[in-house]
Amino acid sequence: MPPSSDLKFLGKRIVLGVSGSIAAYKAVGLLRSLVQEGADVSVVMTDSATRFLSPLTFEVLSRHPVATDLFAAHQEMLHLTLPEQADVIVIAPATAHVLAKCALGLADDLLSTMVLGATCPLILAPAMDGGMWDHPAVKAHTDVLRSRGVTVLEPEEGPLASGREGKGRLSEERVILAAIEAQLRPRRDCVGQRVLVSAGPTQEAIDPVRFISNRSSGKMGYAIAQVARERGADVVLVSGPTALEVPRGVEYVPVRTAEEMCKALTSRFSRSTAVIMAAAVADFRPKRPSSGKIKKSGMTWQNLELEPTEDILEILSRQRTNQVLIGFAAETEAVVPHAEDKLTRKGLDLIVGNNITAAGSEFGSDTNAAVLIDRTGRVTELGLMPKRALADRILDAMLALGPSSKGSARKPPGRA
Ligand code: CTP
Image (cartoon, rainbow, N blue to C red; front, side):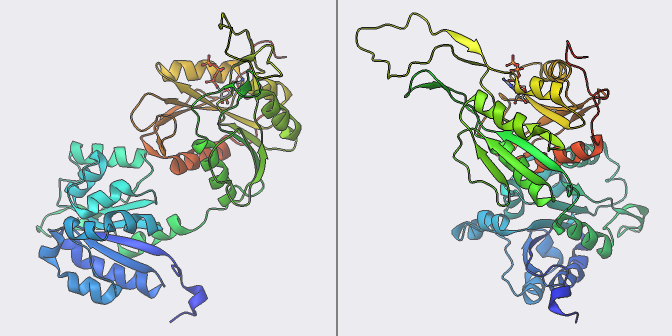
């Protein structure tokens, strides 16, 4: 036994889903290895998995009751508590049916309901008979899952339970363990990056009581700040008013107006390697805010004169030396053309476009389906995923783009 500090999965909580394939017996070995490496593993079996193996086997090895029944589990709210507490969910073996349910968001048993409620990483290790893996439906489901950031391992070639040869064997245990380790290992690839993140709405005063603002919750910017910090970056979070907790280890600069946000960002810009503008900056502010509260009695609002706020990204774009500039485009239609226009107009390296009227991508939601467009014109459509997973994809793109140079990004008009 290695000393406990050397255990790979010490202190990690793993949910192991087992579905109905003959390869279910291999999940026993996987469970033993996970437990030996210090993991606290809860096993969830589908109904058909219990036809291949008894839950008792997994209960003895995991030292936890095995959950199989959605309705029994409901009593303890296991479909919610298990994924909430898990650091990773691994389904091994995952049948073609389970793969399809995860892709489609179906939730007719404990395992699939749990997957739908989970925000932690999900790993699927498929196992199926020859030919099934190559079916267009299975391929489409695999593609959808991968586009959402789910790890779907490639099954292996070789003799299958049916006696045929083909691609469909469950990945070797060491491959599944490596995938789990990769998900649990904190990535430190942002060490050396100094990232300025803006988040939330701005508020533009009409008088000391009233203001113009928008529906931004700040969740996307806060997720980026948190994930960048976890990956080793020094992070400054310049945030308009939100109800969110400031992520640990992040320098927090609270602001209220577009003008304050602009000052906070421009004054820190030269020290940063990248700026990620997730804030929903108000485009206009009242031209003459009243210093006293405007009384309603005896007056009607004929009009409220507004003036444009400073376009912060455009200002930063003109000041840039070699910082990577990343903007957002929250649209209600024609996301890609609008986002491409902003990428060019503001001289950005990357823009994250999304449709705020699409289900799951509305203001305030915990998920988002975005499209990434980079300075070379490459368009990457991402499926609906938790904002933390999207934050990872944006940071991956930031690192891949490398330091920017005045010549490499799209030029805003009027720039030398
Ligand atoms: N942005 C900015 N300063 C502003 C307005 C927006 O820096 N005054 C940034 C946002 O943080 C976002 C990007 O610019 O990263 C695009 O914002 P958006 O409001 O979608 O674009 P606008 O240029 O304001 O265009 P429109 O409102 O007409 O869609």
